[in-house]
Length: 350
DNA sequence: AACTCGTGGAT
DNA sequence: TATCCAAGAGT
Image 1: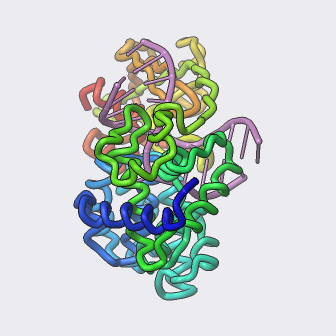
Image 2 (image 1 turned 135 degrees about the horizontal axis):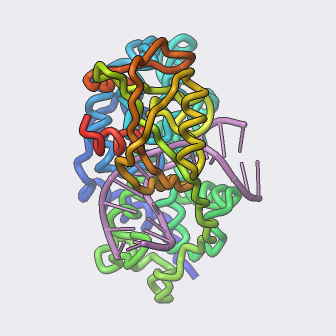
Image 3 (image 1 turned 180 degrees about the vertical axis):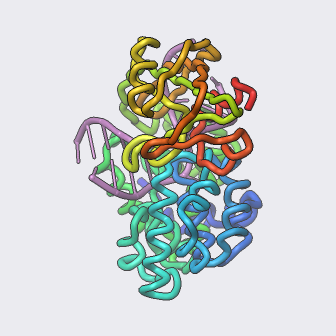
């Protein structure tokens, strides 16, 4: 049985440790709710070290809500290029515009903030608690891992409904005098001490309060079911250049994977001859002989592209049709290119 | 509820 | 190389 003052001991040990040991991160140096919001969206499924340079550039270019609200989408996407999950950027801009026009600021109300596009249960709690000191749960993967161990919760954390159990636990435990340090303390603990494998229990401020530590079960928790492995798809790229050093680029559809991003003409087939026919037809030109340039595998969360890239030339580029165009190498920098396209570009030396 | 949506680092 | 996974949200 837990002692009567267990909750107070836990929240005191956690927040005390956090205030003393927290990493010095850029978004911990501001109290600007809008900047904190940006950081939380960037950090969704994305590592701290990856986010840091993006956060710096983004908050400089779009320093207030009005700047982001009315920025050109191409510039927004260029700033997000390489960060992945691109709908996050479009949803963030849409939500910032909505908040700016409706409230003139980031609303200090979980009900209102949580209705904004791209703001789910985690981001709602994180921004409300960190920016405004509102006691709201911010349950991410770290929090579920830490609390599953501390409280010996063996529900499958891969199941969507399980998150509610942890939200209720957080509301039981949260420090109402400092919800920010409590929520960030749980996440910080999960990030640097209570790691997925080989947790550093000897460095843990709540070790003596942890059920898993006492039972020697810290490596068994959390319980997380495996997801099925990705399917592979052939992916042929035909990088077409004209006689004047320009390359044919096409824009992906507005919806789905890598929405709206630019790529060298691409066909989802394993047959190079078929790819040439598809690309020729799609762009209204006659693609000549092809030369293999590079092969690689690009792994997404839910699928794998087996990419084979070829180069080909056409005597006269002609007029681009639809969502496509001819670009000189330096002009490619103005387009938003996903990583697979950057890999091809790099292999072509352009 | 299950699937979609990127990327890069750790083991 | 294979697998996991990292401050999730939308559909």
